[in-house]
Length: 344
Figure (cartoon, rainbow, N blue to C red):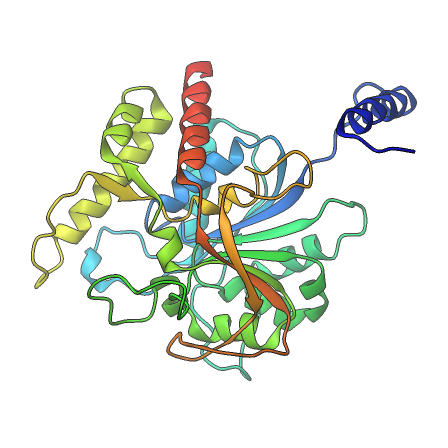
């Protein structure tokens, strides 16, 4: 029997019709994947753009939202929200309520990093993550998306290492890999998301068996979004106005930090967490994969306390993304945001 695209489509339609007749017209179609979204929603608002975009992607099932902690920010002032897992979960809930969408479960993650590999405790998010990963009632694959530190996933794996074979991690974080990219001008510290919890990153890279798709700093910095588009979004409805207000707050906070010279304005904002949408939802229909973005496949390196990588040839393979399709990502995001605000 010759298999052609047309034949597959035709036979697939016949099978779908048969299944619909057997199970009833109201049977829910399977999704491309289940997704857990883990981000520091009380920090940089790029995570809120990513969350809103993800919530509007009908091909995915958002199974769980985890609010992730940030480092302490003493310069932010007494009225600034405390950057804990609870604050991040509250921010995610605020956005879901604003969008008037069915709310996936939202849980607060750990409020602090893992300080000792031998003296850790589960977080309030741990049981929910393990429970979702260990489900036996669905064949939909599970993708764990992180736009912050890796604390909550690391704690879940330490509690139940069997989840390692049952999910894939897409992580926005980590420094550049030698031979693939250069650090940005003036960069002297470890990449920010890694620095939130270096020990958690070591647990995931060095100890676990979790498959990793990494979007390191050089790749996520490509996600430049025009300020002019943010200004336009703000005029279209409550979602756009809310997102612009969050971006404006960042500028105000940065301007209030003592001792830091004024930052010259640019024409863009880096929506660095948006590749979480690109790599999970914006994929090809046949052999689903984010085909318009490019990556290097390599053995997962060991990661050191300072964020540097050490070759580890015998370990599991990973993807390191070198280019993310920003045009596709933002065209889709803007279309979905405009449609949502128009419908509202």
